[in-house]
Image (tube, rainbow, N blue to C red; front, side, top):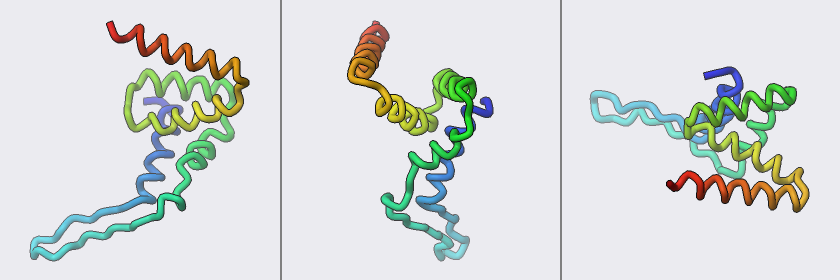
Length: 112
């Protein structure tokens, strides 16, 4: 796993730690459980991902995406989703249509 993939994972890890933390039950049956409940509206996963890649060059961003896709790890998907959202919002209608066509074609070519 490279530095770039770790950047996306660390964003998710920070977010997950903000949602809850759990301790085990002790031997006497008493709960040592500690749960921190956070209102999801107080947690900004998008901003955590964007903050982690804010100082990245275009080369760094490309490496982040390539490494994330090659790793195949599910926990990286939210970070890729944030980057896709940035791409989508900064594309014109024609670019968005091309993305949809690429996604569609890619989904149907892998069905074999």
